[in-house]
Length: 391
Image 1: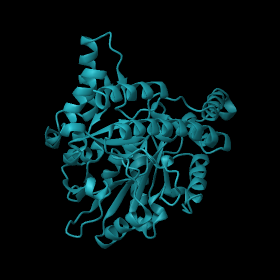
Image 2 (image 1 turned 120 degrees about the horizontal axis):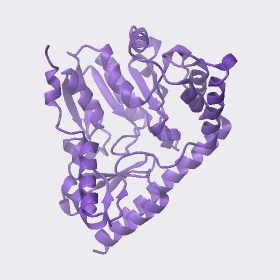
Image 3 (image 1 turned 90 degrees about the vertical axis):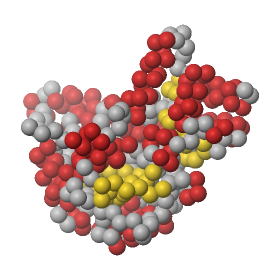
Image 4 (image 1 turned 90 degrees about the horizontal axis):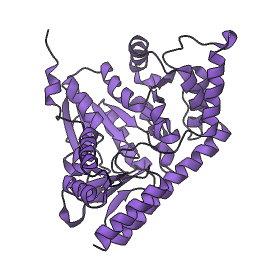
């Protein structure tokens, strides 16, 4: 028996595990201090009424012989796939039903999709980046190359013809920086991928936060993208499914064998998403669901405005927040990102995410999330203003 020694190349701890450990240690030593968490991007608002109603109806169906469902299709029920198809049509993107695969979330599929690719492929990721992109490829032993995302390019790097890669990760709106590619910006990446016979793994988990429709919600709004891109999306941030788990991946037929390979992989290694959850996800696209979810999204957008206004007042430079739930700020007084984390936790009990955890270029930056409650967001900004602006 031999172990996969690639695991020894991973950092000792996942970023958010380290944060949780630090916060727990502080909380144990200071039980009287109220900690406000604006670090991990978990939602706080409950599932909307349309979703809950659909799930309750599905539960009732499962208790009646004539409407009971057993094993479902691993790639998802047609009723949900058709709802997703119609949503894409709103952005002038036509998909076939069997190009859409329902999953338990974008994070899982972004790692599992790597089953389709040889480990000798070279992977390109921007730095800073969502750690899962890197860690899943380290586990497989792939070579990883980085492209710099920084202040100079507004954290939206363009392709570098001197870098050759086979698998390219792009997230827009971006986690952690909140930056959003324009159609022209994505077109450069599509052209690069086609020229290099590469595939783009496009993470669209935050597309619902885009309110300017001149910005692409899907990479398939870009000419040629179906020939080079797989798209991943999730109901977690769109509709509050972080505790319910549902998402989807689009693998176009024009990618050749990949569509059938992914189908084969899923039917072999994945049991499918529960019928009850898929009925809830279907309700996301109903008129009632759309209206209720937009209200929730606006709640988080307002939190982002509150954070941004405080940073403006304090003269702190930041990115994101406008079309993203994340605000990516520059640490004041040239603090390191972990020093700033400790500074906020110790002095005002506000928790964010150190940028260094997202890569080398994240050092000196800090991520705050707008997914907290409005009350906590206002209080956290009051504390930050007192500490940094008036301190």
